[in-house]
Length: 210
Image (cartoon, rainbow, N blue to C red; front, side, top):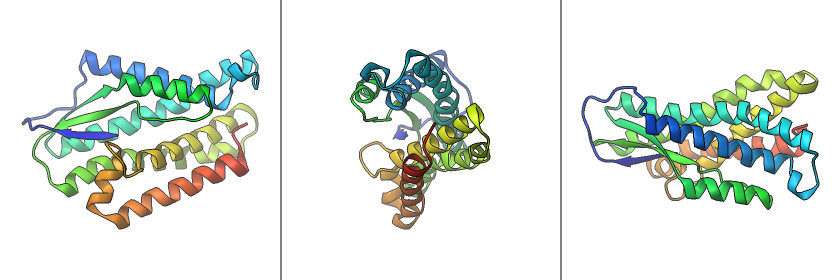
């Protein structure tokens, strides 16, 4: 998710201590939330061992999906002359964990804020970078799904989580990426959003994650 703010010239690809801290907190909270959703140990539907394994797998799959999603926003924003930095939304992270406890996930851990004068199209390109990156990552995880055991599980989780994040962030509401893309070009919005929803649903319902 990316949010536009003020302008600043001569941006560079750098990471402040605050940004790295926020990325780490968001990564951890989102990974735990996905693990609670997929292995609800608190409801007696998974063992402690299964939950621990799911936390570890979530750190890998959610970590790649989330971090590269946000990095894509940052890189494209910088290419458009912006100064960009990620900030975690601690209220949304709390909501993600609490929601996972009751069976749903609101995955809005924070946003890349970027400063500078920018066109509607350029802002849409920055927003689009995250979900498109998730689509590419889903393709990269896809070959792992043919393997049995742990590798296959990582593949299935990697595909579904990336498609889920792409679909969720493309919702045309509030600060989510989809609103910027929808306001710029409804056709491009549909091309990214609709396949994300359909494919994520297919993987979850007909392929599974275990």
